[in-house]
Length: 241
Picture 1 (cartoon, rainbow, N blue to C red):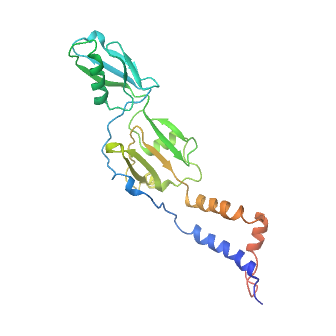
Picture 2 (cartoon, helix red, strand yellow):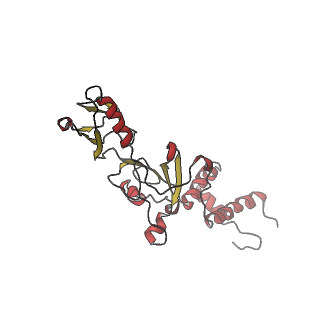
Picture 3 (cartoon, helix red, strand yellow):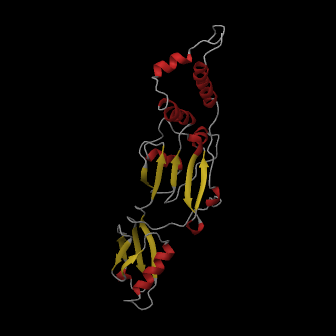
């Protein structure tokens, strides 16, 4: 006796899913040409709102300032007025402050430093418990950034964490990190982060399969889970399960 066609189709579904869960689902990068080759060289620091700057005048030290970068990206100085500094490197901001100071001083010699990098943050997203911007008080690794973001969720894929960084010419660089292997001691050391880095934790292969089931099976087939389970137990020809 032939098995009805609808039973054969239903039985093929768990076999297909079993095949999926037995395989490793890996990332398939698209548009890779938009990313520069990765470089481990530390990028030049960019000033951000919330940073506290130390401005020193060699010839007129009485005008030295410690000033906070405002939310609009400007810093207010006694000898230079308001100067746009956010997004600039230290050398670029130093040059801008020197130019602005010439309105009040003759041949000012300016030295600029970071008193406090409070505006230094990284963006952590994906399968973490508290996604969003998180402080980067020093050069910490990607794993510590994830911990600051509340740690991994149960759906996280630890072996292909994505790291995106601003490269030369403000073009992005991208690489993946095996944080599972790093914890286990089988992968290279964690990568120190830089201000402005983006860390993205993708879904695990099991979570991807579960999401696929929910989107393309449970929402399309008008049966309950209990009924679907009973369908999976339909015997084949000969009575075997």
